[in-house]
Amino acid sequence: MKLKVKKEEPEIPTASMADIAFLLIVFFMLTTVFSANKGMEHILPPNEDLDEAIEPEESIYIKIFPDGQFEMDKQSFPMEQVDRIFNYVYQKIQVNAKKPIIVHTNREADYGDMIRVLDQLKMVELESKLTLGITIPSKAEAARYDQTGQ
Amino acid sequence: MKIKKTKSLEAVIPTASMADIAFLLIVFFMISTVFQVDKTSVALPESHSVTRSEVIKESAFVVIREDGAIKASDGVEDSQMVNMEDIGVLAGAWMQNRPSQPVVVKADQGVKYHYVDDVLEHLREAGVTNLKFLTEQAKNE
Image (cartoon, each protein chain N blue to C red):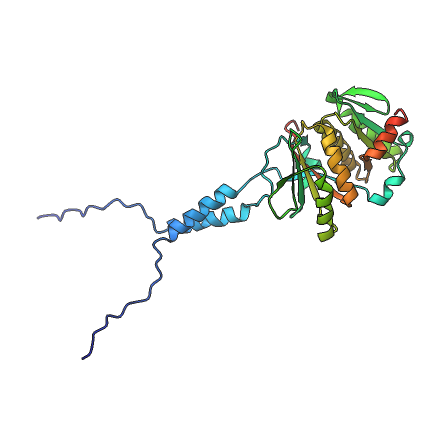
């Protein structure tokens, strides 16, 4: 006896495709973060160079205090006048491009203030198209500067 | 003469292209998605746009929250809470895997500088050279 077999067309079910697609959309929407992903670059000196610390006398020495003041070559300014750094440093490096710049931040000062100063220095660097020797002193160096009464 | 009645049309919203639209959106979000290793929200300090540059892919992260809590990530895995003393060891391991490993410091602008100072000290000792301070675009430009 011959059985009649109904031939079925092979088919991929596509009805749920849109659902899958929307699920993926929701997933990517939730995981996407459009955020500030930019920052200021700073090159740390290699470890071996630590011994040859720069003398504050022969550099542009910027000290940042906890009370929102900063001192630039022994002149005090409030943090609001942070853009003075730009002009001052710009003039100095026109004379001597190799002049090192020390950013010595007091340990109780705000990190934000230090970044504002660094921001100014980076702007000088870009404006003058020179590579500045911006130094953030290590603890040992900072202690030495403090000792020498700077 | 009798005029044939106008056939009334059913109102239909075309849904055939729905899947296409959906896939377009998927592609958009897939391309624009950046899987961030750190999602801690901190008030970043501001800097001018000219001084900011894009964070390099797979940079290691050190996050300092306003209360001084520290999180770290090697740039691949999600950031985790660590102690200050462990930063040196972690950074040493990063540098061993990839000697030019860039490190991003994501710190709250209100944090006291000694937290940052300590982190920098550890990183320097571990041989990190390529550093980046994460900032936000200054509003008053």
